Image (cartoon, rainbow, N blue to C red; front, side):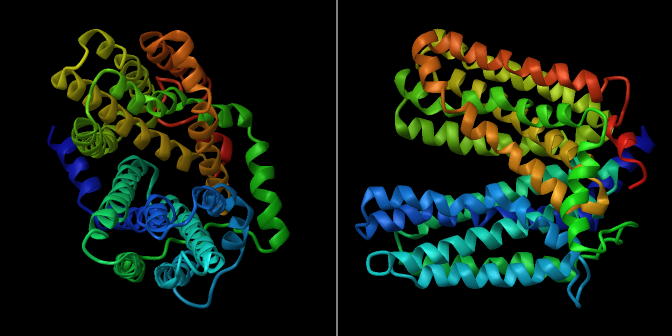
Length: 420
């Protein structure tokens, strides 16, 4: 018991975990500055809806970031090392881009606004590439679960500050001031980068651009079961994503007011997710990634199906809070294991490129799987729809049996990668 306690304390109370949290905050903060906050600003300035809709295209760098990730694996700047050098440069450029976006004029110079927004997303996606690579190289396999959960929680807090905080602040000051203040919050990331240690450069790092571009994909797809790994990335949280796409219309159809949804589904749910992520990271230390993936995956499926309970309970705030708490806790735990597992799939020689590819795939279910959910809910009814979402956990669990068996503490992919 005493040894277990010491293990927990050693993993929780160390500088690397704090770095993971603050780097997560720096990653999450810029995301909504080109999303909901910018949409609100353009609406206030009288920009037409079709133009506001087209601004979704500035988010393409988040999906295509694997295209320039090889450059960050191949080249090392002459200061701070392979990862921290790029990170400091990108974070400074990101802070300047956010400030420039705030100094733009949506009503008079829409193209300059679009360019500034694109630069924010480009540098934000680039920062994500380097931070994901840094986390994989800085943390041991045993620390990946907790480190990933702290990163995700920091990411969510950054989103909360920029999204909810930015919109609330805009009622008291101008949007220009909001963006300038949020540009200053990038100092959190910059200071973290300066104080963090540089991970050791792995043996066999790419020595040419062609090697950096080709070898990450050759190495990954030469592994036994590589396509099954990608299938797992696509399917593990697909049911969760489908259920989430329809929750707000569902709550409204049951008679819940928007204020009740905001207070319980959004605010209460947010903190339940944070707690779930932290618990998930701690339990991964005890269970290992494999068993955590199994347990959290089953809980995710059950929590998605649990929304069906509200069909029979109706407008009941206690049941709403209970279902949301269950779903967000299990979702937070599942995300911790999911992100840690993706990191474990990467070869440290090509961390930036391989993780960028996997994280790009991770976003596909949120878009493609969510598209038919409205039609499904109409045809099946709410109860059958959410039960179907719960059953969507089964394909991901079946794939787990192939390369993350219960009896093994570490994913089978580790042995497939050789020495890293």
